[in-house]
Image (cartoon, rainbow, N blue to C red):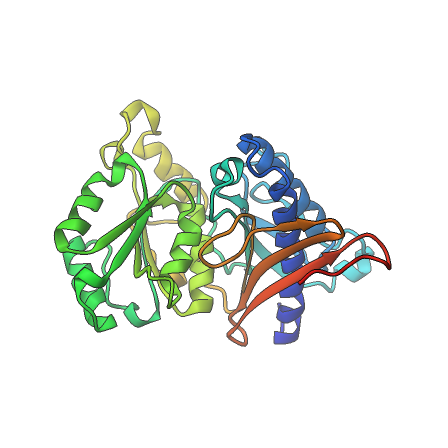
Length: 347
């Protein structure tokens, strides 16, 4: 992505990508088959992405090549409809995708399922393995006020001070998992409220960085790939994410036989170019790119985005597209018209 114009044009292409994934997965909403919901989102995203004028490379995807037939880490895509000569002039782009964040949410018809994508110039997104990370996400007002190694009460005091409110007025969001039992107890002991969610810490992290959602921080352990995509959003929203890998089965709340030994995980991390497995990663470590694009489309209704709505002559999607180049944040409400010249357009 050599200039702002190219970034803006790619952002609209990536909007088409997330819209396609959201529409296909929304067709499966409530059917109870999370794997099928994810599969159709991946297929749709892959098909549209290959039409984008770029030399793209997946750095966060559906898994390794042997585990995921499409959108696997290292897969190259884009420019499929163009000649080799034309493709040689296209920008080199690193891409992180979650074709359906909240597969269970979609399968159950619950809120906050989204299709999401982040992109940057080559080398602008951390190639993170699918390993757990401890995370804390806050908005622009609290950037620099939190420390992932500090006690929960201290972080909440600092957040409250920056926001000019009492700790009792804060709401922390985290995944409803056994591993967060102590975190939940610490938040409540400090006097803050807590909102537990079944899935979707990526969209929850974005909510924590946007004023007016009544979410003031995300805390807890989730996936590292989601952390990278969240970091891309934070670059656009001026928020902050701090994170570090978690290897201890006790902290994860699982039996030791359920997670790889630390040495095996560290080898994977170093094999992906990360030299210090105990490093605290900030926003710029996870998403160091200068030109970052973030796009997301609602699959089901959520706190930021409405879900896909179907009607006789088409469908309607609600998306957000953000870029760092011109600091634009666009909410895009799109009516996809079908049915020919006599179709009735619904707003």
